[in-house]
Length: 70
Image (cartoon, rainbow, N blue to C red; front, side, top):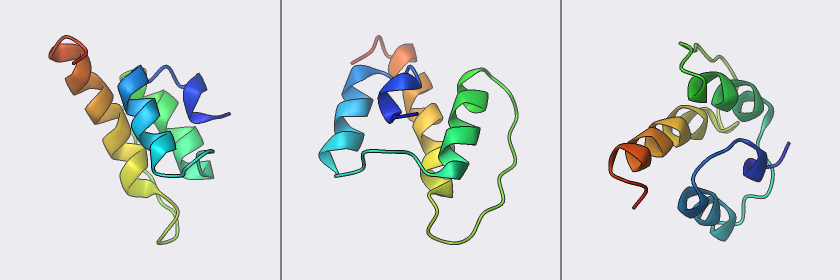
């Protein structure tokens, strides 16, 4: 599932794609939809697999909605 299918805000997806990332890692594919749905998540994966983004992208998405999508 590409980043565009998570339902993240357009500016956030454009930012992700502008950095050169085209497809989420396994941990991101599992964690992002759950976090966006409001579920608590715990993730365990090897260093360098994108755990930080898996946690931060849903937070940034939520913050952008709270600020009116700016």
